[in-house]
Length: 307
Image (tube, rainbow, N blue to C red; front, side, top):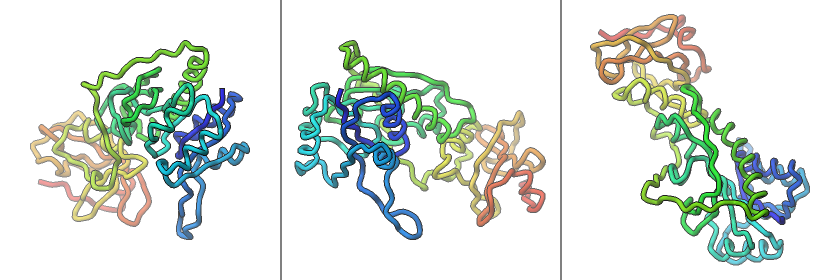
């Protein structure tokens, strides 16, 4: 089966690598145009392009998808199917209609939940206990196509978005291989999504970094781990903004207002949350300093416990 692969970041590169390892016939790779990166602003390849170049697969980087260029390039490759994984572009209907098996996608959630960008991060931020990956047929509207397969996994209580990303990336690659084999064999299911229960999520940005201690300890903990590795949760202590990387539960309660420092010590910095419950901040990064255990930071810096 002739495959045209379309993707850009690491999440997509894992699926492409799996196809290469499985000796799939990948006849072309489409990825986003090269971008300047770093202090020197040198042009850098996407992870997908780097992998394609290493394996001598032709690479295409159209700037636009609707001016006919991409259509003609894909048509010339005569694909049986398009595989689209975190490409970052919406494909027009004429491109979706080119291959006889259409286009399939790997998505980092259990659709129809968390359509859109950053589904992995939001599953952690929202405190979900279970998430997974979905393979689906692409449709005109984003993430609305018929589901082929899903694979579930539990989210660790203190698992970061980055750690979950790495696990789902590999799960998605495995599920893609099964999906393509069954499509070729004519045994793949096609299950319409229940659009009435769909939810949508958007990209993260630094505006959501500040921790809201008016929430429960679990909501605070999930916010801290959900914002790693980027953009990282923050809290203010004595007029300075600290990045927060670790937290743990306590069995304590307090009458202090949410956000107040309850105690400091070998476990870290205890902060009041909703309904008098508290949370222990265990790993922080002070402005201009290295990331460290909160207990180590406290040995050289005194934080005032609020009355």
